[in-house]
Image (cartoon, rainbow, N blue to C red; front, side, top):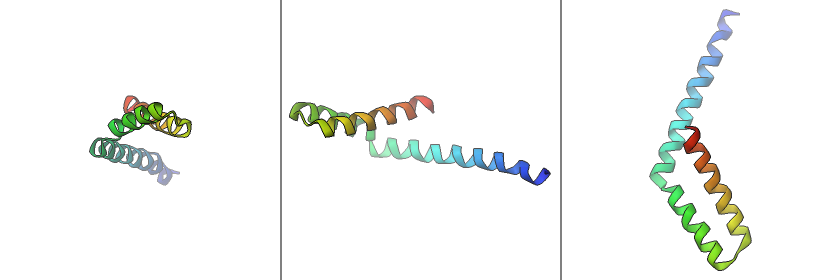
Length: 68
């Protein structure tokens, strides 16, 4: 039973490292800025599928940044 205590610590460590890598990639790729531009463009062109996709992506990125 003592051997199983390492799993929660390992999972937590991997989760934190994965989140840091994700946040770095968002920063490096400027995903928030590009998603905002796509939302603006899709509203101007009145293209609903792109509005939905870009809005969802922007929302998820924002939630991830707020969560972290």
